[in-house]
Amino acid sequence: MRRHPAGPSNVAAPPETDRAPHGEGRVTVLAVGAVFVLWEVLVRLGVLSPIWLPAPSAILAELARSTAEGELPTHLGATIVRVVPGLLLGVVPGLVLGLLMGWSPRLRRAVDPVIAALHPLPKIAILPLFMLVFGIGEASRIAVIAVAAFFPILISAMAGAREISHLYFEVAENYGADRRAVFRRVVVPGSLPSALGGLRISVNAALTVGIAVEIIVADRGLGSLVWLSWEVLRTELLYATLLMIALVGLGLNAGLASLRERLIPWEPERSSSG
Amino acid sequence: MIARGEGAAHPQLAPDQVRFSLHGVTHRFETRRRSTAALLDVSLAAEPREFLSIVGPSGCGKTTLLKIIAGLLAPTSGEVSYGDGAGPAPPPNALVFQEHGVFPWMSVLENVAFGLEMQGVDRGTREEQAFEFIDRVGLSSFAHHYPHELSSGMRQRVGVARAFVADVPLLLMDEPFGALDAQTKLALQAELLRIWRTDRKLVAFVTHDLQEAVRLGDRVIVLTGRPGTVGAEIPIPIARPRDLARDRNEVTELSWHLWSLLEEGVREDLAMGR
Image (cartoon, rainbow over all chains, first blue to last red; front, side):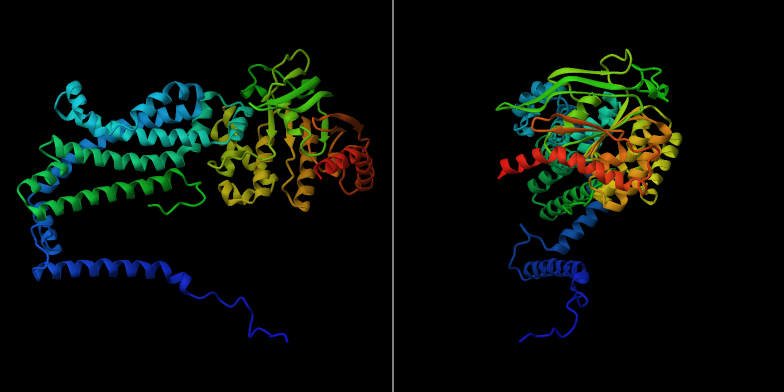
């Protein structure tokens, strides 16, 4: 016996599909909120010691105080004027060399062994050497940050350029493109998606190494504030500073995401790895 | 026309001077493990302003042949020459690749204008000319779209428009209408004949569609075997200007004749693959 369906099989899709993103967002907010409320309550009840885990309200109060008195902004400023120039000094040559190495097998064969040997070195370990070379001032610190930012984008830009289909080079050559035009119209745009992925890693490496450098040698900067608040056991300030470092990271990554949308309007689907 | 760039080697090359001839051209692809012959002792010549169709079963080296004519590939042995005293350098030419080779990072407009951009034509002029051909291939409302937003047939039309706009005396087309539906294909064949009638470039048109080869060409070169070699040369006596509707019986007749020449080889290939 054949059963007839009660109605057309393609009835309107259930509305959850539309609502899902909002719903998920709400659940996340609720979950995080619940954790904070629990945390606050446990500290106030004396279950958790404020020495190593101050209440969220205390941390926020410290963040507000420290910001108002200019302590946190001063250190934030010191970190930014170190990390941003270091980042630019590392990323620009890293990008250019990476693209050229991806494009030219000869250059790649010549330089790749050097890169392979230097890349795995923990960058912070170069600091003493740079202090010998550049002195104990800002220059050596910025140089270490630059080195940390240099490698990730180089490697991604090189991989990106190598992945460009040979077909596009043939098309460009067929229409009479010279080397300059090939670089500008094929190599650069073709490796941009990969290179920007590397830029993201470079930014995070620069921030990480920047904070590490400050913990070791600087007397100003978010890293040194982290260390100072540990030494004097100002736990609220320690957390407030960590919060600030996280916010800097978030801001940098958000900036990168919007940069990506502007530079690669032709990308079929933006991966939501933001 | 050629004076606006790319023509350094051929400063005054007019369409009635552009020809090509191949003498005993053999091409092998060498990999570490093996050497595969794609073309074996191919000799053929095309006269100025001729429309030359090239047919043959898949894998018989049609694409390799076009790349050699375009100067993108140097033959393993044999000679290629162009025009009267033009020497061994290929004249400015546009190759429409089978995989269309439309740059994903450029809009339709930028892609179509690419040849002119490489010739140093200023932006306004090249966009105006590009728009004209985008319109002719039926993509005017997609001029500012990126390739990923187009169907594969539309991308192929972008590749065709790009070759037309470049306005070079030698047009090499590798199954340019392969991904198109039957109706669009007929419309673009008519458009190609119309453009060819006014500009009278030398066209080498590779296809696996026998009717297409007959409908468009002055002569059909039949490549056979693996490696490919010239199996037959059939003049197509259908009067110019061609009219797709009027010529349909003659086209059918001649394509059956072509099929009779190809049939044996195709059957052998099928038997070998079994």
